[in-house]
Image 1 (cartoon, rainbow, N blue to C red):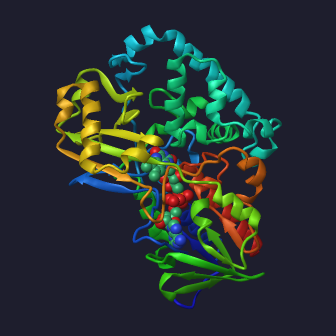
Image 2: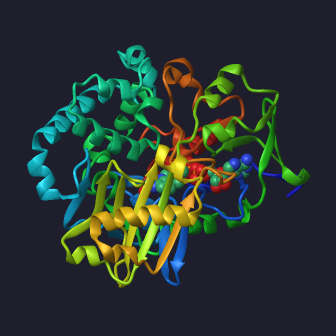
Image 3: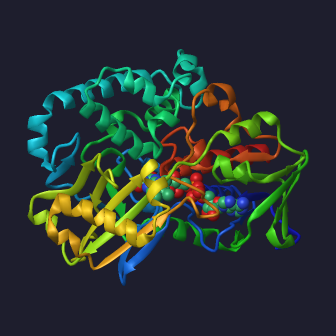
Length: 453
Ligand SMILES: Cc1cc2nc3c(=O)[nH]c(=O)nc-3n(C[C@H](O)[C@H](O)[C@H](O)COP(=O)(O)OP(=O)(O)OC[C@H]3O[C@@H](n4cnc5c(N)ncnc54)[C@H](O)[C@@H]3O)c2cc1C
């Protein structure tokens, strides 16, 4: 690729970069995608845990309002199927033994009502946050000066309601609520619609639908449409930019020259590239303050989904852990039972350092508490840690701590000369999700197409 020329250089072949490339190509411009890894897809990664049994180490679901993703799947011929959602959730909270959903609702009805009230209030406040410019919310300064955790603590909630709220929120942000600003939480809610879309106790909202063959079918098929414009194993290191041209230098002395560049990687990784001339201190201060969060998924495979026969939906909620939530993630037409355990925030940070055997043992003990001894005998196990992956360095997404949005927010997606920014973390609808990745790729491509006439 040395000396390669294209109209638009794209750094990163995740969903946002691939979608941007496809859009640029459709507009009659030539893209060139430089991907650091030996595969496309980035935070989307499907692996076979047993022959013919795919599991999603990365992104798994879409929800009913992920219209761009439904359209893309349709266009690419990737079929979908609904998430299994029958039976009771089990709860292990506030020192109680594991309770079935019915019993939990009977015992803790008052606490659950408190939660409903807080979620309604969150929806009302989030409606005041413009997702394209959260710093312009009428109370932006006030909300950005406190953490989501501090705001939760101020609501006078009972311990059970407060714990449930923490579990649900960490399930979305993948960091403890003391690490994100309250404005960031409201922004997240607003980009997704309402809390019901995000915090559904049973599956719903963002997690209604899966892809036949695995989510990686989406980036893999998208990549075939831009195959001759894609270079794998090409980590960008330095972006030299001038008024009307750009050269991206990659590891190994390779380079590519274009008229514009779309940097389709998370803000923190974008901040680790070198720029010549250097970008403003303002932009750099932003990328120093948008760390990626921490989440892991662990899959247990059994001969059959025995929990279904016992009336369980495979979802657990626990403040004991290590997983705070789980999911039935079986594949229709395959007899195996598959349970997915989520490690998020501190749980991912701590258990990510353990050996796989230790992690599996701790998670097995939790499953046994919820579903009995049958859970002790999986036929296969796999998990995926993201913090140590060089080209991701944490997931699900980037979060803003206090005073980041109001101080540096405008630098997130605003082009700088010939440099444009994509990645789901820059999206205004379903930021952090695949839907947001597509939106951001589409937006960045549109900017470039307009700029190049
Ligand atoms: C465990 C997990 C579970 C998730 N679950 C869901 C879900 O159920 N539903 C959902 O909608 N979303 C989910 N997500 C989020 C979803 O995966 C992301 O929103 C989306 O895939 C992000 O796409 P992107 O293009 O913005 O970024 P990325 O996927 O991060 O793509 C960036 C690409 O750039 C490459 N790259 C990095 N640095 C360089 C460099 N220097 N030079 C060249 N290339 C580089 C990377 O290798 C990568 O391919 C999940 C993510 C994870 C990790």
